[in-house]
Amino acid sequence: MGSNVLVVEPDGYTADHLCQLFQKDGYRIHRATAGADGLAQLRRIEPDIAFVDLYLPDMDGRRFLEEVTTSGLETSVLMVSARKNIGAVVECMKLGAVDFLEKPFHPDDFALAMRKVEDRLALEREVRALRSRVERGAPYHLLFGRSRRMRDVQAIVDQIADTDITVLLRGESGTGKDLVARTICECSSRRDRPFVKVNCAALPRYLLESELFGYEQGAFTGAHQTKQGKFEFASGGTIFLDEITEMHVDLQAKLLHVLQDGEACRLGGKEPIKTDVRVIAATNRDIEEEVRQKRFRADLFYRLNVVNIMIPPLRERREEIGHLVQHFLEKYRTQYNRPDAEIPEDVLEEMVRYDWPGNVRELENYMKRLVVVGDVESVRRELRHGKARSQAAAGQPARADPAEFEGKTLKEIAKAASREAERRVLQQVLEKTRWNRKKAASMLDISYKALLYKIRETGLDR
Image (tube, rainbow, N blue to C red; front, top):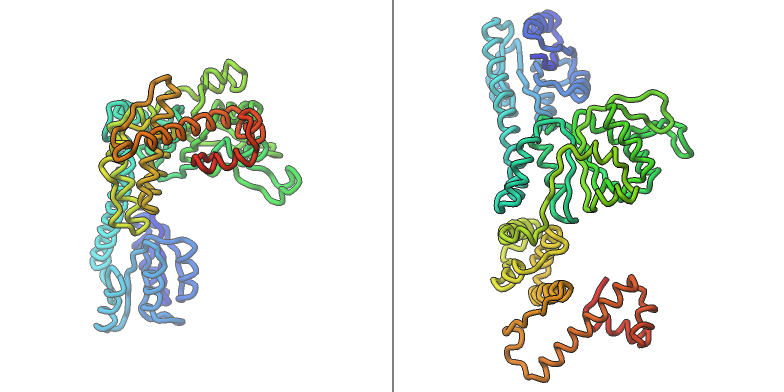
């Protein structure tokens, strides 16, 4: 089996006998004659099996067993004793021992005890695998369960997940590229190895270079000790390079070398380090345009673009919105202890009609706000206004909702329409000036103070 075994036994003859039995089956043996030394080795090697005498020179074996069961280690413990003590046997079994052998024991008794250990180890492995599949299944079905567009994405993921092929994920911000990358990893043979995410837009060039490739001690001022890069840390696993088009062109050349040769070199290092990493990259930009504008290397694009997966925006898969709303409702009810939180039917209808420029991330933020704050009226108003703005931007007349005007006089309706028109003009001018309020006030020919008042009054917020 090749597993680690710890034998904590003060009697040399018994210890030798046990080591011979274990070595026959290919176990790696570690020995200790006292409890303190055994516990030190236990924490260091984290053995699969521990064989412990009930009567150790420095402690009771039951105390050793208790230390094992409370440590969080998945070590199966077999207890042994030369003295008959029914109470001790019962107590040890209650504390979690797999079996209890009486010295001197016959090899058949040992073989029977080891079968119990192996059955227990097999059961634990099965439980862990089942739990892992269940955990992986939740995001998988959330991603792919409802729309034809996402089932097309699922078909590609199923084909390429359990390979080492490089993948480029494309789509607007908030569409779920991160979740698709994690799903690819979880459905691959690398699922038990590291998944490392690096946001290429979050760090300036030199910090990103040291983050990706690491550095040697003394490579630059402040490099007091050698640091592993993300490519080294992710060895055997997957690295997810988010917002890859934000990476500086000079750094792109170094990344290309890693992808071509499977080697990385730390800053200040002389010897290349072998890397065994699957690369998944993502961008929300038009990467072909970035290549044409010389902001992204064509050779790196061709190297990354082995499999290209386009994640559609939420407005193109509206059939998922109700399912996502229910998912986030249940998630945040539990997380924030709001079991009575509900989403009114008319708000859900507004959500289905809304275009979601921020995609799933924007929807999740709205759901969190609705569950925690219960801000139904303002959410309903924002969704309606947001839909009106998107229609205006597309050159479509915004449709009036009769329910909005119910119980209002013509004068009140005109005033509300005027306020909305004023809000749209304010927003367009602020966006045109990149939210330079002084410039916006000048363009609108009003005072700076009046502009600030209008921004507050219309509910505009950057």
